[in-house]
Length: 217
Length: 251
Image (cartoon, chains in turn red, green):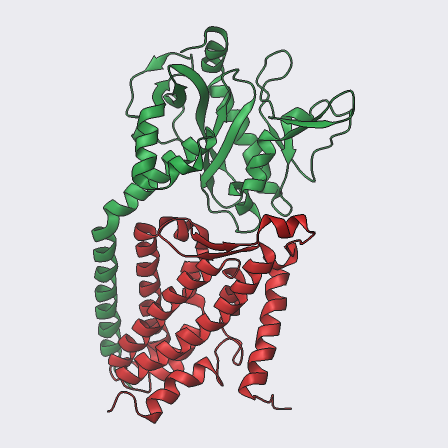
């Protein structure tokens, strides 16, 4: 199979655009609301999800013909849970501050419907290379949305833009003091969960509009 | 349909493989994780003692700062210094040998950090409370390990909560407000600790206790009550030690 024929491109680009796991399928919302307070958290979370999604897709796709149908959900869960635990342990070793900030939400990747959903809907029916591309596509589709949401939440909620580094995050840009002096104020609501709902709703609207998706009546 | 034996065998093999993968990962990075944990505890102690954030940027820097400024000792309940392996003490269970971390700049005591730990709602909360050399006013408080709900009980580790302990609004005669730290001793010198108050502290003149109270966290009453309980319990264990430092300036 040629790696970048039109079918492979479609596998990658669909979930980023017209079949986005968050904005179209509305999966993985829990973490999209929880880890989007700061941009650096969203970026690390995206990387973790991409890693888990690609690995679980590939592993499950490789053993798909051997998995007894009756226990397939259990097998899928164990593979996903093990991978998530590995990510969690790695973060604790190499990005300790980040792992403290993300706290339980790394562990909760296990229950992220995107991962289980892609395993059941795609990986068990396709070969490993396609399953890998599907993982990349859906991972970036997820990441795109939460990075956009976290960008706006952090910028307007806390007045900073933070990129991940080894420690507590590198502040790339901060709203200058002169703006505050001139009367500008951070929108505190955006830091709270309702703010995440509002931004996410707007992003979903814009994204669906751009992808030209019509909801079935 | 696969046979039962096949299914059982398959599950067994998958379990073995995944299990060994996990233990292999854990085993190969355990040292790094333990280093991080150790640095995190030291960072908590240094933060509670009000060290500059620039001295706490990396694990190496933290260790260096800790070594050069902190005098780590153990005392018993009678306030006598005892021998101990300070890093191996289980802060939650241990009641006989009490660790104490003294910040010294040029041999002068600048602050005293004491470990505090106790049950919140879901988990044990671990932290350090630091007192000024007068052993009465709070220098800082930091929590570093807990399993409370993020956004509710988990807020104990946030700056807005810990800042409550060092920002007590004091009105002078002219009505202007200055901020002083909260106090763990009452006017007769007895340790009364600090209470986390549901709803928020009543700062009217009738509430004489407000210097010993901090605002609670909405939706986390059980966590707050836990903090109140273990702060008092743990501070009382150090009563004789703190009296000694107050009266003689040393232990």
